[in-house]
Image (cartoon, rainbow, N blue to C red; front, top):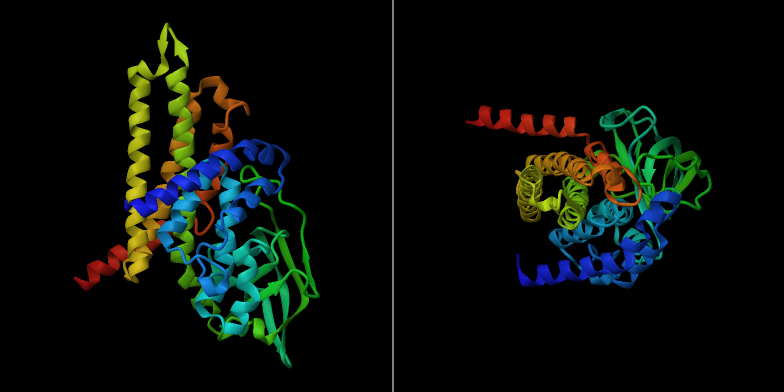
Length: 376
């Protein structure tokens, strides 16, 4: 890795260790927003990482975003999720929005003064976005939205919500909804197994009136816009899983090196060494695949779609395995909240589910494999 990226990783790692890790357990226990982490991220200008300087950002590439998410997730999965969802929530605006909409939405998010989210999932719609029922109808110069979005990360904390809504029988648009728009309300805070510091709630739209300037480009092409952003968002979720795996691994190595049984360090036991070696291989192989996918995405290579599905699948499955083994290596202490591995194991489970379940990722991968067979 280039020195520039390594230096960036080192700086984010130090920030995470000094400013985020000390509060992670309390954030999880009280299910509260990670205020201390968000303040630290803002001071380091990390919310603005993906955006150009004209919009108040620093113009960081996808690899730098992945590294930042990894390092934050290694100490607090919730804090990493708040950060990456902000980026996802503005991605369609950055890729397809008008200059006017960019100026309205992005600078506040880039500075960390405003939050963002994207709204796709509904009570009866998860992986099949074509089944979305939230409807948008034009009314003069405005659009009226009605529907309910479920499991929305960063709600109700965020200011901006990128809502995918049906604008015709077979058409979809992306609408930038502000939390203060008339007709916008929120459901109760979801009580979750993990990622407890990441606010999650329903976004309810009841005759919510949105000015036409807040439609992202063509109101009939929102489905393709969202699909176009999934490569990047899946790479960031893979990075989050990888970061949690690395954090759990580091905790397990530290614990087994210090803990003694039968007169010697646990790290001297051959069976435990075998587990640690397997964990290390799972992390590094997943990281290699993710970084390969990032390179393909950055190059605009059509192979990126399948490769990032592979990376999301491998990173999250391996992370679940590593976190479980890390807890096992802590023995009974791993089952208590005195050590962070039980939180990491709870947090990492969702990475196998959101942003396309790993079963969906397998379908994407298999479809590409058979498509290649037909072409050959």
